[in-house]
Image (cartoon, rainbow, N blue to C red; front, side, top):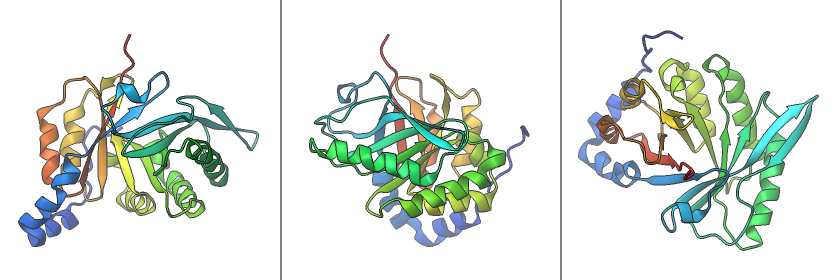
Length: 242
């Protein structure tokens, strides 16, 4: 990996700031303070603030011999109160067939709706190497085609995408999704060079959110993201209490 960040062109961002001025900043106010929570395996809605926007882990999807396999994990469908609910699927190994992923999601939605719980969308959690983002872009585009329009499509992203990702490829991914949540942590700790990623994202020219570890010290530089009208808020990964 090149240690010198390759900056994504910020011309579009500068133009927006010049012509939108204060009104754009005010329009961004509600989004910049937008906070949501990931609930991974072993957690329940009680681990997040009441009526929060939740990203609930459902399981892992993998492929073997051209066949798609789904390992059910995380919270089972049950009565749950949230302002918005996204169902999260971890993609392992090679990318599965997009239709298989959407079919798995639709079955999960039907199970949640029986309780009844409204599902807002799907989130795909896949650590695509930056060098293979073109293939992932095509996959995400196909998922969007297969997915009903009333569901939002969210994906997680690696911090390196924002630094070294090809601009056209990132634009393609952004046009196929409703949001990219850049994960600024690894395992249960913030990224070592988190300040580099925050600096790059402060000028990122497409809509995004960031993922942080709940309870970890938040760099004060995160506040610099709030002047970027493309910043959509924070999703906190809640650590399971030991």
